[in-house]
Image (cartoon, rainbow, N blue to C red; front, side, top):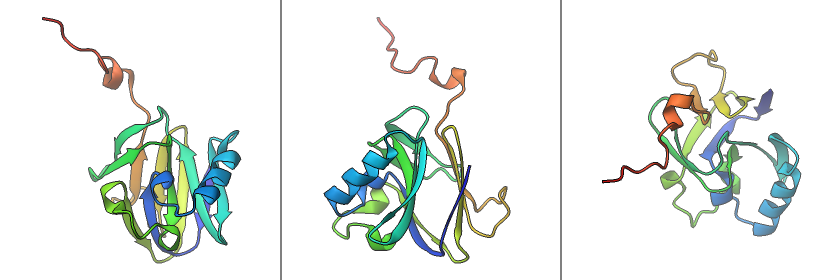
Length: 144
């Protein structure tokens, strides 16, 4: 699916860390309950969020930026909605999309891009799905 947001600066990461108003975040979570992906409005500004393939954790984009996730979602939140008391760049990243933001989401794969070609190296791509080989030993500890 594709989603479109207006031009501006966006926090890309777990929205639970940055939306200032807990009541507003609770309403977003209610809307998300039966949807794998959602574009909605908070205080008159559009946001996007979608479920990661495997829930909470730390995910990496193709530029090796890290994204901490505690709500099982990754999204795009206008910087105006972000809590200024949070050090949000430790949890996600801020990007300026001068010509608008297009998001492509498919089963845990997130692609955030502006007017760039979708395969541009500047597009932010976070793939939260894993190949079987990537998780085969997850959580296993060697005994010895």
